[in-house]
Image (cartoon, rainbow, N blue to C red):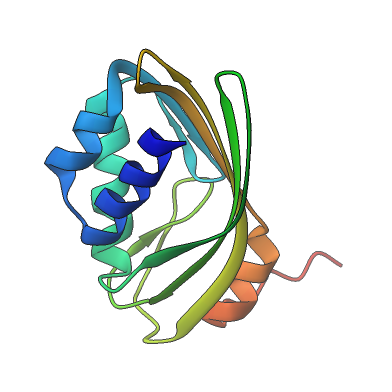
Length: 138
Protein backbone atom coordinates (compact mmCIF):
# COMPACT_ATOMS: atom_id res chain seq x y z
CA UNK A 1 0.00 0.00 0.00
CA UNK A 2 2.96 2.33 0.58
CA UNK A 3 3.70 2.51 -3.18
CA UNK A 4 0.04 3.30 -3.93
CA UNK A 5 0.05 6.03 -1.27
CA UNK A 6 3.14 7.55 -2.91
CA UNK A 7 1.42 7.28 -6.29
CA UNK A 8 -1.58 9.29 -5.06
CA UNK A 9 0.72 11.86 -3.44
CA UNK A 10 2.49 12.24 -6.80
CA UNK A 11 -0.77 12.45 -8.75
CA UNK A 12 -2.19 15.05 -6.36
CA UNK A 13 1.06 17.06 -6.66
CA UNK A 14 0.88 16.67 -10.47
CA UNK A 15 4.49 15.48 -10.40
CA UNK A 16 5.10 13.42 -13.55
CA UNK A 17 8.58 12.34 -12.45
CA UNK A 18 7.25 11.03 -9.13
CA UNK A 19 4.35 9.25 -10.89
CA UNK A 20 6.87 7.68 -13.27
CA UNK A 21 8.95 6.51 -10.31
CA UNK A 22 5.97 4.61 -8.93
CA UNK A 23 5.35 2.64 -12.13
CA UNK A 24 7.14 -0.11 -14.04
CA UNK A 25 8.38 0.79 -17.53
CA UNK A 26 5.77 -1.54 -19.05
CA UNK A 27 2.94 -0.51 -16.72
CA UNK A 28 -0.57 -1.07 -18.07
CA UNK A 29 -3.34 1.48 -17.40
CA UNK A 30 -7.01 1.16 -18.35
CA UNK A 31 -9.62 3.90 -17.85
CA UNK A 32 -13.05 4.60 -19.33
CA UNK A 33 -11.23 6.96 -21.74
CA UNK A 34 -8.86 4.30 -23.07
CA UNK A 35 -5.73 2.39 -22.18
CA UNK A 36 -1.98 2.92 -21.93
CA UNK A 37 0.47 0.10 -22.59
CA UNK A 38 3.60 1.61 -21.06
CA UNK A 39 4.78 4.29 -18.64
CA UNK A 40 5.05 7.08 -21.24
CA UNK A 41 1.47 6.51 -22.41
CA UNK A 42 0.26 6.42 -18.78
CA UNK A 43 2.06 9.68 -18.05
CA UNK A 44 0.40 11.22 -21.11
CA UNK A 45 -3.00 10.21 -19.67
CA UNK A 46 -2.19 11.99 -16.40
CA UNK A 47 -1.01 15.13 -18.20
CA UNK A 48 -4.18 15.26 -20.32
CA UNK A 49 -6.34 14.97 -17.19
CA UNK A 50 -4.30 17.61 -15.34
CA UNK A 51 -4.68 19.95 -18.32
CA UNK A 52 -8.46 19.46 -18.15
CA UNK A 53 -8.66 19.64 -14.33
CA UNK A 54 -5.69 21.71 -13.06
CA UNK A 55 -6.92 21.47 -9.45
CA UNK A 56 -7.75 17.74 -9.57
CA UNK A 57 -7.42 15.88 -6.25
CA UNK A 58 -7.89 12.25 -5.27
CA UNK A 59 -9.05 11.48 -1.74
CA UNK A 60 -8.74 7.87 -0.63
CA UNK A 61 -12.01 6.78 0.98
CA UNK A 62 -11.14 3.12 1.52
CA UNK A 63 -8.32 0.75 0.60
CA UNK A 64 -8.14 -3.03 0.58
CA UNK A 65 -4.93 -4.96 0.02
CA UNK A 66 -4.31 -8.63 -0.64
CA UNK A 67 -0.96 -10.00 -1.77
CA UNK A 68 0.06 -7.85 -4.77
CA UNK A 69 -3.41 -6.34 -5.29
CA UNK A 70 -4.65 -3.01 -3.94
CA UNK A 71 -8.21 -1.75 -4.45
CA UNK A 72 -8.90 1.87 -3.58
CA UNK A 73 -12.23 3.70 -3.44
CA UNK A 74 -11.58 7.37 -4.13
CA UNK A 75 -13.35 10.67 -4.54
CA UNK A 76 -12.05 12.73 -7.44
CA UNK A 77 -12.61 16.49 -7.32
CA UNK A 78 -11.62 19.21 -9.72
CA UNK A 79 -12.72 22.11 -11.89
CA UNK A 80 -13.05 21.52 -15.63
CA UNK A 81 -10.83 24.31 -17.01
CA UNK A 82 -9.22 22.69 -20.07
CA UNK A 83 -10.12 20.42 -23.00
CA UNK A 84 -11.27 16.97 -21.86
CA UNK A 85 -10.74 13.82 -23.91
CA UNK A 86 -13.94 11.75 -23.69
CA UNK A 87 -14.48 8.05 -24.25
CA UNK A 88 -14.63 7.49 -28.00
CA UNK A 89 -12.02 10.15 -28.73
CA UNK A 90 -14.11 13.34 -28.83
CA UNK A 91 -12.87 16.41 -26.98
CA UNK A 92 -15.05 18.57 -24.73
CA UNK A 93 -14.37 22.27 -24.30
CA UNK A 94 -13.96 23.54 -20.72
CA UNK A 95 -17.20 24.07 -18.81
CA UNK A 96 -15.78 25.76 -15.72
CA UNK A 97 -17.88 23.36 -13.65
CA UNK A 98 -16.67 21.67 -10.51
CA UNK A 99 -16.98 17.89 -10.18
CA UNK A 100 -16.92 15.45 -7.29
CA UNK A 101 -16.90 11.90 -8.59
CA UNK A 102 -16.77 8.50 -6.88
CA UNK A 103 -14.34 6.08 -8.48
CA UNK A 104 -12.47 2.83 -7.91
CA UNK A 105 -8.82 2.27 -8.78
CA UNK A 106 -7.26 -1.19 -8.75
CA UNK A 107 -3.50 -1.79 -8.69
CA UNK A 108 -1.12 -4.71 -9.04
CA UNK A 109 2.15 -3.91 -7.24
CA UNK A 110 5.22 -6.13 -7.62
CA UNK A 111 8.80 -5.40 -6.54
CA UNK A 112 7.55 -2.06 -5.14
CA UNK A 113 6.38 -0.88 -8.59
CA UNK A 114 2.88 -0.53 -10.03
CA UNK A 115 2.68 -3.13 -12.80
CA UNK A 116 -0.91 -2.45 -13.83
CA UNK A 117 -3.80 -0.29 -12.73
CA UNK A 118 -7.37 0.24 -13.79
CA UNK A 119 -9.52 3.24 -12.96
CA UNK A 120 -13.31 2.97 -13.04
CA UNK A 121 -15.87 5.76 -12.78
CA UNK A 122 -19.47 6.24 -13.81
CA UNK A 123 -19.43 8.10 -17.14
CA UNK A 124 -23.00 9.31 -16.67
CA UNK A 125 -22.11 10.75 -13.26
CA UNK A 126 -19.15 12.60 -14.80
CA UNK A 127 -21.27 13.94 -17.67
CA UNK A 128 -23.98 15.11 -15.24
CA UNK A 129 -21.38 16.82 -13.03
CA UNK A 130 -19.99 18.68 -16.04
CA UNK A 131 -23.39 19.48 -17.56
CA UNK A 132 -22.78 17.42 -20.69
CA UNK A 133 -26.02 16.79 -22.56
CA UNK A 134 -26.34 13.21 -23.74
CA UNK A 135 -27.49 12.61 -27.31
CA UNK A 136 -31.14 11.79 -27.89
CA UNK A 137 -31.34 8.09 -28.68
CA UNK A 138 -35.05 7.90 -29.39
